[in-house]
Image (tube, rainbow, N blue to C red; front, side):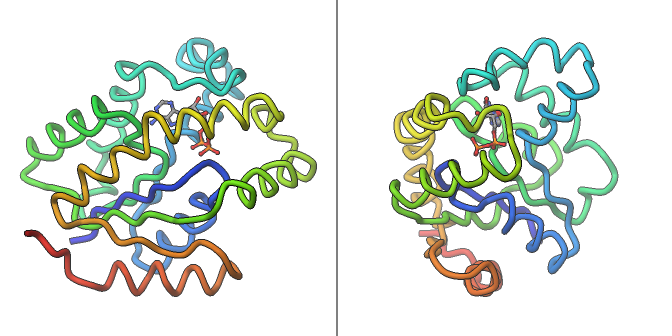
Amino acid sequence: MTRLLIMGPPGAGKGTQAELVAKRFAVPAISTGDIFRSNIADETDLGRQVKGYLDSGRYVPDELTNEVVRDRLTRADVAEGFLLDGYPRTLAQVDFLDKVLAEQGHEIDHVIVLNVDVDEVVKRLHERALKEGRDDDTPETIRKRQELYLEQTAPLIAVYRERGLVFEVDGLGTVDDVQQRVADAIEQPPQPH
Ligand code: ADP
């Protein structure tokens, strides 16, 4: 039973932690952002449809994003579990994910929320922009993505908290420190109330 979500503002280190969790718990880490970026790089139809959204830091429409996730969650490698990174990001995506999982008789069991303050994440994203040159790490899109996160995605935490699934983890510290906290959280039973 390892069906996990990792949430937190852009720049909180979700991707890095997601990869480590995936290794440790032997489940695939699924990042909608990575799926979009690889489709853009490969110039697929999907890539062409989503490029403008990523370039400007806006959310890809739910219909497109949901279909990508549905596809991914029907593959054999997720039978024993998965970690979703960067999805769901809207209430419509939460509903969709519930529905897709319910069709398979499954549900999410832990939602890891990485807490990092805004100044720190903005600093990290600027550093990443210099190092990795990700196209959407410009000052304008960074601001836009933070805004969207606060407006549209942070409220989802309350939905999962109601279900007793939220485990908040301090995202400050070394990668290993944070990883240990994340792993400890995943090993705790969910607390439905
Ligand atoms: P970050 O968390 O740093 O913004 P991601 O790699 O998770 O980076 O996402 C990059 C971009 O991909 C987002 O700005 C958005 O345009 C798009 N995206 C990723 N996941 C979703 C999603 N669940 N819903 C809508 N758009 C998404």
